[in-house]
Length: 207
Image (cartoon, rainbow, N blue to C red):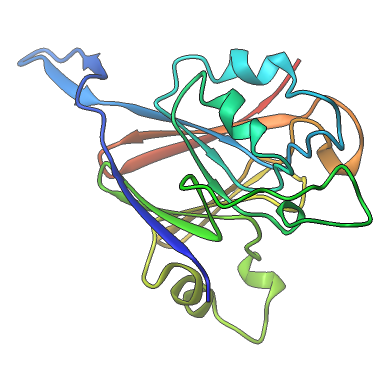
């Protein structure tokens, strides 16, 4: 059975001042950092420092799995609270000492459901694009993994950063900061900027 974690996260202290002629209004802005497939220590001893710099000031970090060691979440928590999905590489692999397995941890579930402002966000390691799975509908997969509709799916697994919009659904894959396209190099992270029911997604190439 898929393990689900449900979180309600709001940030009443962070506001963006929007200037209007009459009147001025305060609108809530929540910035979420997205990262996946860090593959530590397989891809290197540590998370690249550019990841910490990119996430400075975010309200929350979502890791879409394949951490390989729990230390990755501990390190990221120095920047912001962290919620993670368990990847296929987060189970113990006897033949690979670089994949010792991620232990049970309250921050880690097979799939996570987060209520971020007015949006329902699903976090999972692998989730196919609608055109990749012809024998199941996207709605069926969403119900199977998240037990109900979601507005946003954050995933990883492919090491390829992309943003896809479908009617009523935003899908964001942040790629990998350490193994983009399965190549050892400085890769990508992503962001969600949430304003109530509005959400913007962006990908950052680390440099």
